[in-house]
Image (cartoon, rainbow, N blue to C red):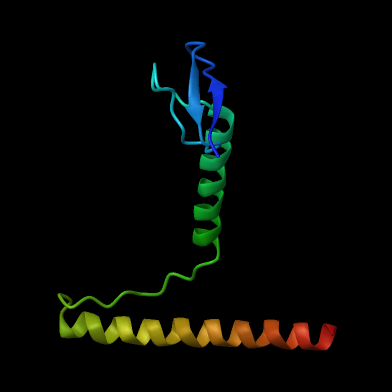
Length: 98
């Protein structure tokens, strides 16, 4: 369903598909800049949430020497053990809390 909307920049009427990314046919500015800003803020918030809930583990690269790979694998083992223990305690607390 197409509609028309008056451009807040140039004042001309343009076809509008009710999408925040729709642009004016005359000046090529967004027809709904507030909704576009809201959509961008929502995408930024999703990206921040993804970064917040990830655990960055040690990366073992192919280019690393055997000595470096060995010590990185030991560090990775400690990291995984720590994450496993913390996860177990969180599960236990959630189980006991009901």
